[in-house]
Image (cartoon, rainbow, N blue to C red; front, side):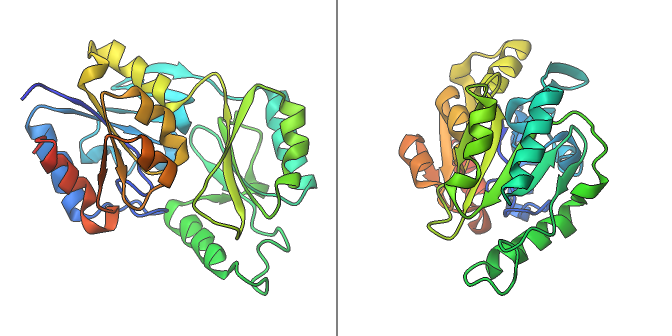
Length: 274
């Protein structure tokens, strides 16, 4: 079989959301595909610091921070943090409007742990989200935002109750950033990411493909959320996990079983990668 260039999202695709541990079937599939000569890269919203334990499974590089930092081997292909003004606006305006923030430098992620009423365990309907946040912080080593010391930021994630809470920041940043709202939380809360329009996962894939001399027709991408949309639209063959966004499933070439039901191994087999 012709060598393929494979790009994998992490949370909800390679691993259960918020975990660093893929199912054994996914680990075996990645290693077997590599043995078969295919080239594997991560393509994730996570920053560099949150992928270090996953890279040794067989990945040669990654599109990180949703495309803001891209590398292949030891070579950095793209590096695009926020400006200081964009960073300060994002941090301060979200805080002023009681929005829960995750902010990402290249190596470390910081998060709020005290915003009320969103994180108040007495608030009806939010206990599941609170527990998920605590799990993510504990397992991924995310630091409290009070420890942030002004490093360049690549991306900001937000969680809030109403769209009006993020409108002041959308106005302040103008057209320079996309506000990607996830569609998997129903009416319980709003969750999304603020991503610079100068990059996306699809452009990161193009950089790596060009660097390695691959035609895009020979690329395969796996994802589960709306932040994977540009990836799905860029690669030659696109796969969405069954546990993923309905909108992403509509655009993907193939839908495979959920990550926790050996979906990655199933798709690798169906695509004759293993």
